[in-house]
Amino acid sequence: MTALKYQIALSMVPGIGNVNAKKLIAYCNGAEAVFNEKHPLLLKVPGIGKKVIEQLDSSKYIDQAESEIEFMDLHKIEASFYLDSTYPKRLKHCDDGPIVLYKKGDMQLNAMRCISIVGTRKATVKGKILCEDLIADLAIYAPTIVSGLAYGIDVVAHKSALKNNLETIGVLASGLDQVYPRQHERIAEQMQKKGGLVSDYRSHAKILPVHFAERNRIVAGLADLTIVIESSLKGGSLITAELANGYHRDVMAIPGRPSDSQSSGCNMLIKQNKAALVESAKDIADLMGWQEHEPIKGQTRLFEGLNKEEQIIAALFPPNESIGLDELSLQAEMPISQTTAVLLSLEFKGVVKSLPGKIYHLSH
Image (cartoon, rainbow, N blue to C red; front, side):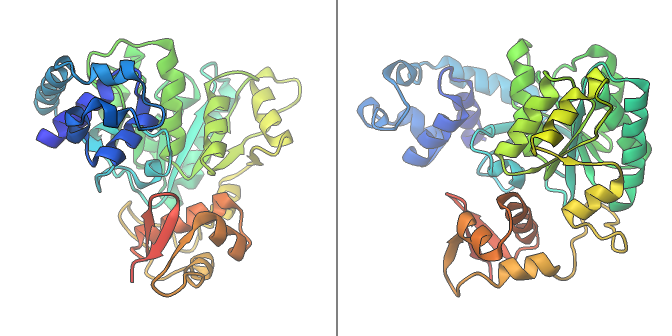
């Protein structure tokens, strides 16, 4: 519990951010050590300035962290530090992933198949039906559905997942003490029985407009694939798609007519080769390498053997040596995004281990 206190406290210090916080933790070998380290030594860490370091002397962040832990215990909220085994493996590969992720519910954050579905808040009737039908057709593959619990496509994705007995995870732009918008409190409660809620904001945090853009990195980072259903040329859905591309994750979009403003963002993603075109669940299964004759029955089942792509990647590892992501992608003649997805699958199966710096090593 002491370690968690300092981990949460460090996440509260303004001006540090997740990237620099990870640098400090690595340099000092732990969050508690960051608070105890001498200032001249901390100044040697790239990106860390004097004003930020001076704030580490304040005891208020430790006090706030202790209050947060008390609140968590009272309301059954858990927290995962980014170096913990309970932290989402996919999110570990995102440099700007939160150092502390709060969660509430009964969810599997490392499900074998996980996709994000996002779209406009002003969804059309047609867009909502497309979302419902797509998720219903995907049910045979039992993916976890991630979204942002916002109006429009987001909440339709969550409801459709529950309707089809799929686990669904909502990423909030607030602390887990509140649900925004409040109209979605009931669906949020239902989700906690078959999935749950996550956030990198502490309880009672003020909801700011910037939070909605920031939470999109978690929506993209938790999944292997982000699907955009209806989006204008501007908005959070396109931000999520860009983030997913930056994380070397796959992106797909449902196209629309050129005259439909709600489809202009999807069409642009496809036209610029930033997203693959999706018309059916089969398009998704084909891109992700999901086999219809071998669906996952439940979120905890793993394949008994390795598929063809996994065998190709596993065979490239030199005996007792590590190898980098770029080199594996080059030798396998696979795109980075595809190689990353295969490595993640191998990691789930215990075949490989991920090391810092996008380096991998065979587990056995």
